[in-house]
Amino acid sequence: MNQKITVLGAGSWGTALAMLAARNGCQTLLWGHKPAHIDALKNDRENKHYLPGLAFSDNLSVTSDLAEAAAFSDLILVSVPSRAFKDTLVKLKPFTRDGVQIAWATKGFNSENGSLLHEVVAEVFTPNTPAAFLSGPSFAREVAADLPTAVTIASAQTEFANQLADILHSGRFRAYTNSDLVGVEVGGAVKNVMAIAAGIADGLGFGANTRAALITRGLNEIIRLGIELGGKRETFMGLAGLGDLLLTCTDNQSRNRRFGLALGQGKDRATATAEIGQEIEGVSAARETFLLAQKHGIEMPITEQTYKVLYEGLAPLTAVENLLARDPKAES
Image (cartoon, rainbow, N blue to C red):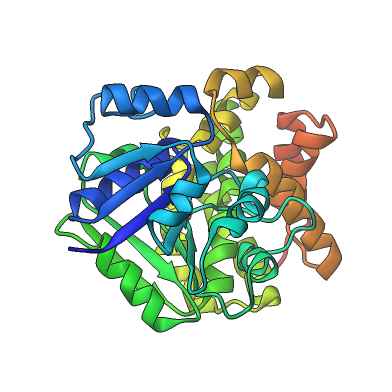
């Protein structure tokens, strides 16, 4: 392939996606904001900090120069934490040309006001800028190791979604397209909140019954919020909804689940965060989801109790007991 792609964000997920594109034959440039980290990637030809033991292809290059990253390709895939998403785009924009295409694999809301990330792209660039979101059940190390994975690429521009899907699609990586950008974004953000809740329950020593109930009722909360914001119900039963929720709530590769486990085991938020040593998107997503639920008058009890544990000092055991003490009601 003669296709070029720039990936912004040299953490585990950005690195894995850059490795995937390069493995598929794309000329790929991976940008990171820490020069020392990028120098290590250049020297080691692998990301020893996040993905040790997995070597880069020859057609994967790295840089800490944002201007160089923007000049390399008009197709830019952003994989930075949600709190840094808007700032990264603002810094990127002066270096981009007309016709730039923005995709992202960042899951979360805009930390400034709770808006969806496609709205941030439209604000920083233009509402007509080709925009696509990659989401679904995928751990970075498994993608980097070329283990079978299926994801969703959501975009209002079908041609751009198909283009990105073609770049990433391989014999071990299947990319489905979806026009429901809102639904895919909501599913990708709120599942991290539910993963913290599931981790807390497991950390407290509760069993599979509790975990299954949390996942099922958590999906119900995601659907309620997603539909209110304009998403489609069927999206939440697919890879970017149920699929991603199951993955994140049940496997300890999930940072959000491990964070919840630590809280359930009695560790404080600071200790749990330090032990994981990477961004835990569900922490900010819990606040933003809770505020969105309040704004739109949507009942999201799991989100509410998770928010209170994280931001109001509620004991994890009390949070679970509060959920169980709710009055009986019809399931739907």
